Structure formats: C-alpha cells, structure tokens
Image (tube, rainbow, N blue to C red; front, side, top):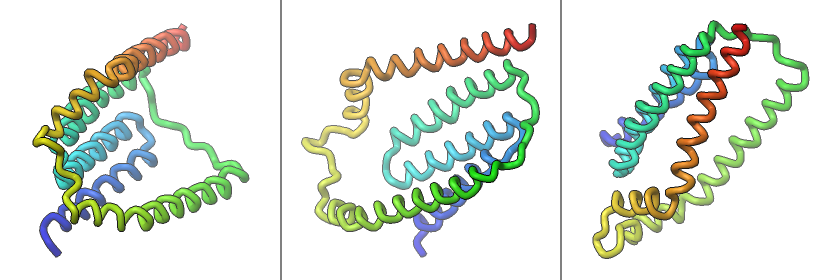
Length: 173
C-alpha cells in the first residue's frame, strides 16, 4: 500500500467513527465535538484530493466558525443530556429499508461513475484551462455568481440563532 492510500483509510475511518459518535452521543456538546472531528477528517481528505482551498475553508468556516456558533447556541439553550425513547415498531423496519436503499444507490453510483472518473484523470481534463487557478474560479463563483445565496445563508443562520434564543427565553418564563 502507498502512503496516500493509508492516510485515506485512516482519515475515512476517523470521519466514520466521528459521525457514528455524533449520532450516539447523549450530550449535545459531545456531539458538536464529534462533528468537529468529522470536519477535520474531511479537510484531510480534501487535501489528499489536491483541493487545498476547500480544505482550508472546511477547517476555517465549518470546523471553526459554524461549530463555534453551534456550541454557543447549545450553551445558550442550556441543553442537557438527551432523553432516549424506545423506537417505534414501524420506524425500525422502515429506517432499515431506507438505509439499505441508500447504500444500494450509493454503491450503484460509485460503480457507474468509476470508469468516467478514471478516464478523466488519465486524459488530464481536470487541469484548469489557460492556467487559471482553481481558487480564483471558486472565489469568482462565490462572490460574483452566487453572492446572493451566499449572503442569504448567513442571514438564515442569524435568524436561526435568534429563533433559538427566543424559544429558549419563552421556555424559561
């Protein structure tokens, strides 16, 4: 095995373990910390793919700013340990069917697209035209083509924090 392949499997396992931990944690702060582990592992995977800008954004924006916002809201709401209830009789089999269907869909998509991805990598079509950097193209898309959805997302996050604050204050009184 080559070193990048070993690093890939370590980062992938770390992301999966963090995601499973995220789901099964009883305390919301521990879930948020597990999500940070997933975000950092994904940033490492982006680095392996040669997407340095996306990896940096993953750490700075998601692993940093968004997770600080999540932890702030969790602490603001004074969320305690989650109460687990027994699963309903219909939710178990339906959820299992959905998981199997989703896994089958993902497997079929991977099998179908493997040939086209390998063909693209061998022909060199992934290099950017005219030597324009990938970072410049991404920044042009974010700050020129998609500036309104980008700003709308930040506005929606602000409204969600304010809504959580109002709901928390309403429950206390």
